[in-house]
Image 1: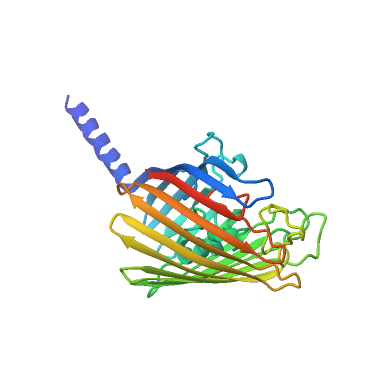
Image 2 (image 1 turned 30 degrees about the vertical axis):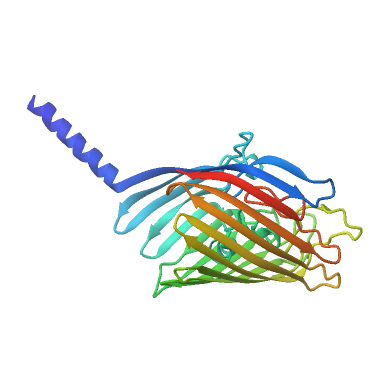
Length: 353
């Protein structure tokens, strides 16, 4: 009997120690609503859409304490569409995030698939809509560097409010290690109500059969400041080279002048978030300046309204309009879809768990 009691005690102590040293969390977002798009070549459309504000997802993240201040970390996250149950990111099971790495006093090293430093700068610092809803900044600001596979990323510790990231994406083209590779970096400063960050992405366009092409270079300087009664946002981006500013589709508005992806452009974003108890009003203005001879500029204005039913559930509505010039073909999308026209209205519900 004493041996049984001792064995049970030892097992309980071991189990308790294991629980204390490692943890796994399941989380996700379920988001769906009604979208009305107009101004497209094929006419207006009203549809039930998933992931309007935040792409619907499920994920697992975990950490194990290895001792000496070192931890093993992992994150697996997949996207799904609530309207039909399909997977996003081309059907990948964990297409949003798939990583494993180590974290300690030196910072963190992760390997796998995840957001690029450039996109984190755009989505989490510059854009009050967080690249979701009809007001998504990615309607006009390049989202090509959203996330990369086959990537190793180092994230530094925070020193006096400063932190940095450096990412390398393997091109994995036999015979040419530079083809299709990407290099990303970011430097951030965060203290009190101020958050400033600059992010950069350089993607080599060479393939196994096409070499000597120029790289796509995207740089974004972003900042936000929380005044309490309002949070102001500012972003300025520069895009140069082939595929630095790809279009969502060939000619969605049916313009007589064919829209052409710019190889030399810049973007300006000005935004604000106004919290009012359970309500939040969002607004932004984005200017797309095409510096090529075609001069296919565009402007987007967007407004949104969120009402929190609880800490995890909110109702939302949003509207955005893009004015295209000289045959530009930019369309209003949302957190999951690229859009079909230059105007869009959203209304829906979002729940996090």
